[in-house]
Amino acid sequence: MHGSTPNRTRAITLIRSNISSDFWTQLDFPSSDITVIQLKGMWGKITIFNTYNNCDNNDTVKLLSSYYSRNRTQLEHADTGTAHIIWLGDFNRHHPLWGDPDDDRLFTPDAISAAEELIEAIADAGLELALPSGTPTHQHNATKSWSRPDQVFLSGHSLDLLLSCDARTDSRGILTDHRSSIIDRSSSSPY
Image 1: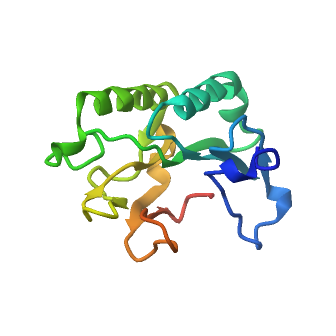
Image 2: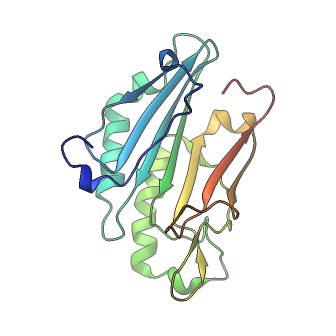
């Protein structure tokens, strides 16, 4: 979608130049708020959905869920090895499940209701929370309060390959207020 609406692109994924283009591809997605890439190897494949969900609605979550449902067979099947799925990015949803449960200022009834749609979508996709609950990812520019609108969800069967997933407090882009998430894989992990 970047080619048709470049000024509306809110999700971008950069691929290291030392990863051969023979091993990855970008999948078409009907929104400039989601970038989908798939990496393949003898170990299987991993499909990464880099997501931006607007604060005002769940349109992107609905598109993501619909796309996943329509393409579930292809996404969850690998010719060799195992298929892994990651949904990550700025979902702009607050819930005690992943936020600081003592910080109830963000857990309004409307916020909980909006987050419940995301929780239902990740449950339907068989994903689990990979970034530990309570890990802050966003610092409000004015109040300097921390919150957790950014998430990393991983296929439930892939969790045993994960050593850690954390927000890098030392890595924040220029003019941004969100922290980068890092995922460390186990030495036995193929990706």
